Length: 126
Image 1 (cartoon, rainbow, N blue to C red):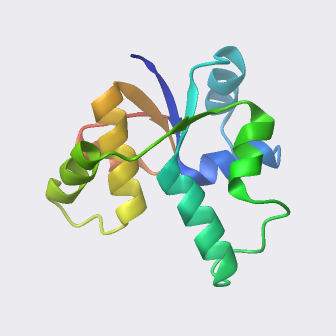
Image 2: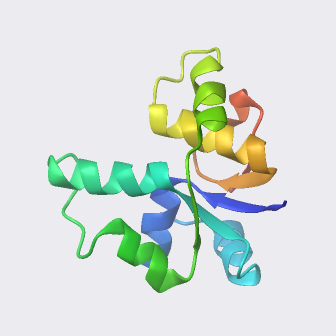
């Protein structure tokens, strides 16, 4: 399977039509309908951080954003969770670890500004 997995910020920036999303990331999303995925980890991250005040409140639940944009949902399974937990290194963000593990598990490129995800072996497009 090949495709693109949006990092959480890329999902937000796409949904807001933000200029913070790179042109190559925007072009890849636009050119590959049916091949753009969003992790269940991102859904949790956005709704949780919004609820506790770490990010501004979302106008709608993250799942509604994914559905409205026509992106595909990617669940976190036990094999992927174990792979994410086994990553070495100092990158402490558990959401990034899960996204990197999912990208490796499914042969996706991660659309992210965070080049540290490459340290886990995942391909990054930005």
